[in-house]
Length: 315
Length: 316
Image 1 (cartoon, rainbow over the protein chains, first blue to last red):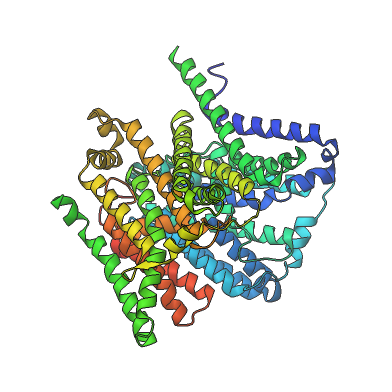
Image 2: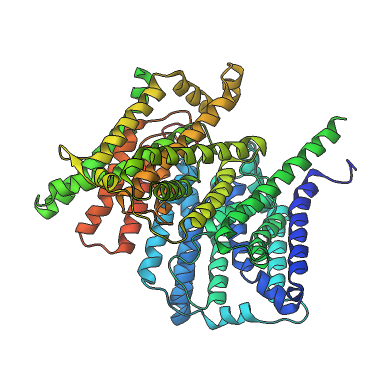
C-alpha cells in the first residue's frame, strides 16, 4: 500500500474522487444529465474556468499569486468580442501586447523583488479600466470561429469534455514533462539552486507570466465563444475560482508543488458543484456558500489522507 | 520603538506626501471652491478603508500567506444582520453594534478554525469562509434594503467641529491599534510571528492564541465597518463590501506595512486611505471616465509599490 501510492498520486486521487462522487450524485438526482447534451451543459462553463485555473497554476508554480486573473479574463473577453471580431489583426496585436505586459510584470516583480499580490492587485484595476474603455456597456459579438469551436458537437464525447482533457494533457506535458516545466517548478521549490545550476530565473519568471497570460487569453476567448457577447465584469469571480481550483486540485501556494491535471479536475469540481446544488433544489441564496462548503470538505479529506499517509510512513 | 519608526519612516511619509499632493492638485483645479467638502468626503470615505485596513494589517503582519479575503462578506453580513436587528429603532443602536461585533467574532472564529483544524492556507480558508458568509448574507438580506435607525444614520453622516464622526471612530480605533501594536506585548508577538513563526514558537510565544486573536480582531473590525457603512449609505446592500477586498489590501501595502509580514504601520494606513480616495476624486474633477480612473488607480498602486517596495532584500 505504501509503495503503490506515491504522494503525488494521492494528491490527484482526492480531487478525482470528489469529482466522481459529485458526478454520481448529479446523475442520481437527474438521470437525464447522463446524456451527450446533458454532460455538455454541465461542463460547458468549465472550459474557460479550467483554462484560467491553469493560468493561475502557472503563476503559483513560481510562488506568486495573480489577483488580476478575473479582470484580465474579462478584458480579454471584451477584446475578443470587439477587436478580434471586427478587425482580427488589431485584436491579435492587442492580445500579444497583453502577453508582453504580463512578461514585463514577471520581470518587474523579479527585478524589484516586489510582492506579486500587490502588483497584480494594481493590474486588476488597469485591466478592469481597459475593459470598461473597450466595452462601456455589455455587448459586442463573439468571433464566429470561437463560437463555432465552443458549440461544435464532435461525435460520442461532448466538446466540453474533449476540451478539458486536451487542456489537462497539454498543460501536464508543459509543466510535468518538459524541461521548461522542470525549471519552473524548480524556481518555486528552490530558486537559489536553480540559479546556481545556471538557469536564468528572470527568464523563467517572464516566460511563466507570458504563458499564464496565453492560457488566460484562451479562457477569455472560450468564454466569449460560450456567451456570445462580453461585459467588462463578465469573469470577475474567476480570480477566486482559479485559486480555489488549483488548491482543490492538490496544488500548494509555495514550493512549486502543482498538478495540472488536478487543477483541471478542481475547476470541473467547482463548476459541477453549482449544478449539483441546483439539482438538489437548494435555494440560489446558498449556492455560493455550498461551493465554499464543498471546498472545505475536500480540503478536510486531503488533510485526513495526508495524515494516514504520514502514519503509514512512520510505522 | 525608535528603531521601528526609523525603519518605517520612508513609506509612512510617502503615503501622506502623495495624499497631500493629490489634495492640492484637486483644490487648485477647482480654484479652492470645494476645499472643505472635499476634505470632509475624503475623511469620511477614508475612515471606512482605515477600519478594514487596520484589521487586514494585523493579519498581514502575521507573515506570508496571511490575508483575510473574508472582509467584504463579513462587512455585508454584519451590516445586514445589525440593521435587521435594529428594526429602525433608535433604542437598539448599541445592542445592534454588539450584534455586529458578535457576527465578526463568529466569522473570525470560523476562519481560524478552518486554518487550524483543517490546516488550510489562510487565503483559501478565508475564501471558503467568505463564500459561506456571503450566502448567509444573501439569505438574511433577501434583497430588502432595511433602513438604519434615524439617530445612527445621522451620526454616521454628520460632522462634529467640521470633522466627520466616522473619522473620529476611525481615529479612536487607530490609536487603540497603535497602542496594541507598539506598547502591548501582543503587538510584539504578531511581529515576531510574522518574522519567523518557528523562532516565535521557540521563544515561547503562544503562536496559536495570537493568530486566533488576530483573525478575530480583523473580522470584528470588518464587522464594525460594515455596521457603520450600512448606516452611512442608508441600508445594507449585498455588494457593499466588494470594493473593500482590494482596498483593504491596497491601503495596507501602500501604507508601508511589509507584505512579507513582521512589520506594520498604522499611520501609513491613514495616508494611504486618504490618498486612494483623493486620487479617485481628483480624476473625477478632471472629468476622467470610469475606465481611465481605474487604470490610473492601478498604475498608481504599482508605482507606489515599485518606489516604496524592495527595501528589504529578504522580502518577496
